[in-house]
Image 1 (cartoon, helix red, strand yellow):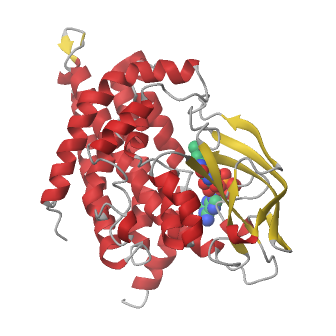
Image 2 (cartoon, rainbow, N blue to C red; image 1 turned 180 degrees about the vertical axis):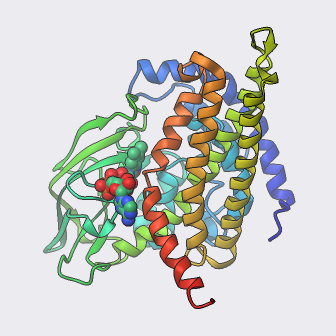
Length: 404
Ligand SMILES: Cc1cc2nc3c(=O)[nH]c(=O)nc-3n(C[C@H](O)[C@H](O)[C@H](O)COP(=O)(O)OP(=O)(O)OC[C@H]3O[C@@H](n4cnc5c(N)ncnc54)[C@H](O)[C@@H]3O)c2cc1C
């Protein structure tokens, strides 16, 4: 593995960093106040920030080489440090058109969409004109096993008719969201992994009801939000199916690989910034006649955090490198490893930073509370920790069991 970044990546890293310093960090407090006071509305400076990023060539950086004209040409390894920087301000990814769940949805459309599906949905997503949501999880079944999904997708003449209830559909509350990628079953009697299909559903299709936004630790995560959605006799043309009947499970696997690595890269950025904030804060406060930074327990917390972040970053870069060299399938164990390691690492580091900040750490005056909420949620989203351990444990036993 060679983790030396290319000239191009170094140049873009410097540009993303400068852009964030000039345009994003100064707006953080204003953004927090705005989204709390105005749920489901766009932060007014957002559009002009997106235009600026696009003009600066900092646009769609996530889409890896190999997607032809759609891709700006970076490898996952080249993109990793940029995603890390974006993770330092959670709402900044959208400014570079690199935010979840759109990145995963764009990859699905780029990889599996027909030319007409791409013209209708991928182009406006790549241009940042619309946003999208991914509807897999259902309240009625344990959705960490995707084969449990019960939403039905039934062929009727030239259409498919969809019925089911989804929840935790991230981005569905966003006023710019126009597309839902829905996973359901076309053939409940087929083999366990070919029962599922994915279908494109415009949000305004009759029969689609956004029932309610779900809160995360009391916050709406506005303007994206996470919705509960009812699908009642939702009728879409047969051309909206992705790939073909029975391809849903394998598309989901393909989608979640890159999505997981992006979350991990962002979380490393959030953890790194939390550590920097912690180091700064402990030099600014004194208790019992001593600067807080001088206490051994604080130094241990800082040291542990530094070790854990650097370990997690190297593992994530190794996963990115493996995906670049052999595809997401070849990197599946490393993707499980980072999904197990990084969100928990981030929870621990951010928790220590919160502690060192005292009451300030849980307030809205620093990003720490939102970082914690994000990290904690990623221990569940895109597969809970235990599911990745279950699979990684199985694969590891298979690999090593005959060697002794
Ligand atoms: C903030 C947030 C955003 C999300 N965004 C989306 C989205 O955009 N689209 C979408 O479709 N879903 C989304 N999700 C849903 C998420 O992917 C699911 O919550 C997750 O897959 C778990 O499914 P579940 O909630 O049904 O839990 P269940 O499947 O009921 O699992 C509950 C718990 O059981 C345990 N468990 C399960 N399997 C095993 C095992 N093999 N070994 C040991 N323990 C096990 C784990 O502790 C697990 O957390 C989001 C969730 C959150 C919190």
